[in-house]
Amino acid sequence: MILVTAAGGTTGLAVTGALTARGVPVRALVGSDRARAALEAHGAQVVRGDLEGDLGAALDGVESVYAIWPNFDEGEVAGAPRLFRAARAAGVRRVVYHSVLRPGLRVMPHHAGKAAAEEQLDAVGVAWRVLQPCAYADNLDAAVREAVETGQLRSAWGLSRPQSFVDVRDVAECAAVLLTEEGLDSGTFEVAGPEPLTAADLAERVTAVSGRDVVAVDAPASPDRGTYAGRCLATMFDWYRDHGFAGSPRVATALLGRPPRSYTDHLADVLGTVGGAAEGVPPASS
Figure (cartoon, rainbow, N blue to C red):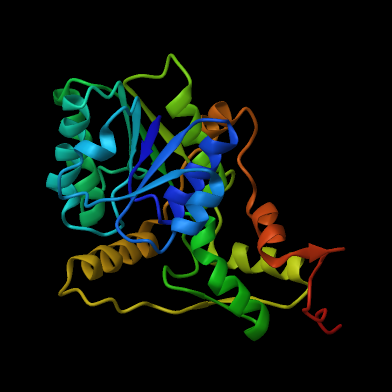
């Protein structure tokens, strides 16, 4: 039995699906019933629980834990190591921690929180592995659909710096490998998409896949820096604007046994392309 925490989010749903597709029994820990139906459709055993509370029942009979902490949650710094210790106390064999590409970029509070949690893994006394994904291609899906309608792909990180967007399905497959295969303990595994792309590059690909003319436009975000989540978002967009967020696909390729999905492949799924044009979307004017 594998326990997936924060299982109702984008990552948790994808990891749960990747594991159950392999025939692995999964217990999905959720804070609400919002994603219960989707998780049960995957075949997971869904349990309600608080990551800040007593996890004894959730961990009972569990061999491995995929430890996801909710995005931009200040409680991760203390909470994730507490989860690791609870897993050890429950006799869990292995913890796989869902971190982030380059957690050492501590100017971003959520990266600093991931780095602090990673530092605790050696001290816990349980076998561990760490997955460090880049930004998800899926995070742009709503903006892409809007861009097909408006002709503008709005970028909160500027136009000139690239990112190596990775499909969450590939992240989930890599997580499944770390949770089920031997010989990977004490390893840290970066998972990035196959090519670094600027917002302008993304707009070109949306144009090619949708058949609509789309251009990237600079659309700075203004998160509330007075909240923890707002500071995470603001410093993240600042960093991406100045430096981008690119990584190498080599590790993901090794874990997957194939190259990660390209952004064009991801778009084809998002836009439901048939014959090179998005369904329900008229072709670009000539």
